[in-house]
Amino acid sequence: MIRLFFLSLLLLVPAAPVLADGPRIEVTQPDFQFGSVFQGEKVEHVFEFRNAGDDPLLIDRVKSSCGCTAVLVSSKELAPGATGEVRATFDSTRFHGNVVKTIYVYTNDPNHKLVQLHLRGNVKEELQLSARSVTLGPVAAGQSVSTRVKLTNKGDQVAAIGPARTTAKEIKVDFPRRLLQPGETADIELTATAGSGKTVVSGYLLIPTDSPRLPELRIPLQLRITKSE
Image 1: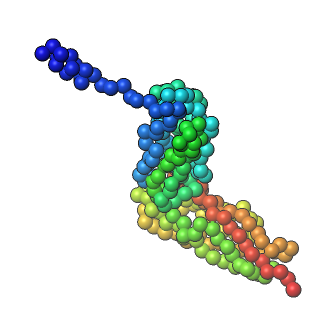
Image 2: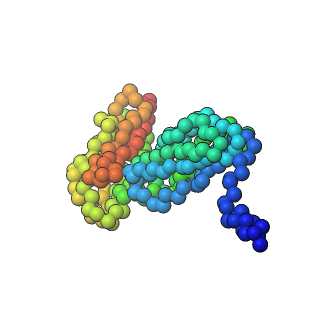
Image 3: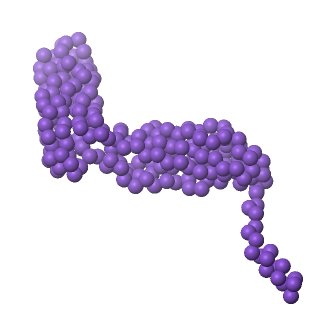
């Protein structure tokens, strides 16, 4: 009876975690779904991991893909059983739609020398432009060409936008500051006059907004000029 009592006590005691041979990285959640955010918002997340091996785990370096920054916030050397963290920040300003950002963690784990961590989600455009870039021409020197870009308020608040400007003197825009209601679309007209001596003119269309997430919209512009005979 006494032997059965002690056997029951042993069964109630939680077993200690078994450590694998050598260093071994074990990530709690390698994929983080951040859902939907408005363009311009930043997403922050901390990835947790531990050394499930019986030798020190060394973190050689941490790298990240475009639009994302990552930093190791714990020691580069983790003793067996110790835990570490990688803090990742994704800036959604230049992105839209479904995105996947990857963080690369390089270790001395012989079975996982490179570990990939992922931030996944959707970036919604509060102010949506009909074009990601605009090319005018080709047009002969001394001639003019025009085009339009549509801007739609996809948010649920009134947006103050403008006045718009361009960084290329050959490309003009006439768009004063105005209010854009939710669901409303505005036309932005661009007119370019080709000068001589150049075949390509590049610049940006800049549109200030009152959005705290996206204070300025930026579209690359290009004017192509035909060579004079």
